[in-house]
Length: 436
Image 1 (tube, helix red, strand yellow):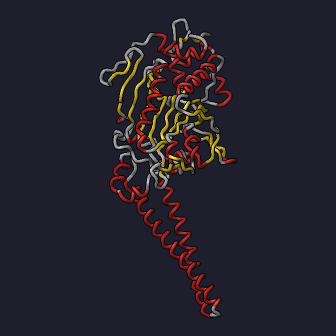
Image 2 (image 1 turned 180 degrees about the vertical axis):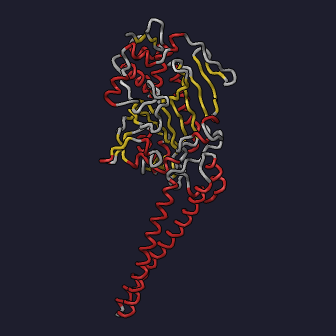
């Protein structure tokens, strides 16, 4: 959630920033007005409560002094005020619900250096990288010349090798599910071990629960706004996680962390579940868009002054993995209109799939400021003293596997049907190539 005190003190500035994210000025004005009315209602309620307490003490004093008639008069005033208090409580509850209905779905304030734009067309390409050319300026980049076997889509390669069985996955679970068989399953496991080992130097590995409570989903901003995207188990009020970001963010929920322990860095391998509502017919063939997929996530709690360095640490780790896998990729700086709800700044990593001719997002590396920490009440106690303050949270995929798996098949595809693996991955897999 955004800081309401900041909104109150800098209403015009915050309103202008949120409008770059597509929020209507009328919505912000309504939040400001409702927040003001709520604070006035709370003040009136608290004053009434204090008066009732004072009257109660007065009744006791008069009773002890034997002034029964006067005590009865004061008791009646207290009763009448108590009836008024019920209405005040109802008003506070109604205004609180109205405020939260806006506040909980309001997006984060964008970072000052996030590109301004209405949609993905305004995203800025920061750089490209290719195995032969290294980092390249966007103005100078051209795609490599791919060999004919690399232009075969991954679903054909996987089927020919017997490692990708989309037909039976559909029979078992429906469309947009995948089944990896034999060496395909082993390759997926190899990718996971490859990534977890790469992060073991600085990130604590966690295996969190896959099902989480409603408040855990709310902490990251996935609820209430994106309820239609979530797989819900209504009987138990649990949700299948859409990303390990959800349980990892809540590790410190309602806790106060000593500043000396920060930054805290976590990595987790989990399955992820997304309904992909509204995605019918859009990039749904093969492994491009799935309801269930595996991913290795990175997440950090830190003090605000360390946030930029932590953001680029996650980004660098994700880039290094893609480079070690020998895939062509680019880094996008997302504009304000394309940022996720909770993010203040996001860099997307997209690999190029020669078999589909598409750039495929494989990681979003985001800084959330204190937006998620406010929702989850994650604070730290400054080493210099003073009251607790909210941490900053950051996260990124390093990496999400379906599109990486797909692009590896295409990039390594040979004329004889084999798929050569990058040397570092081959050492985990135990062979240099996938063969039928």
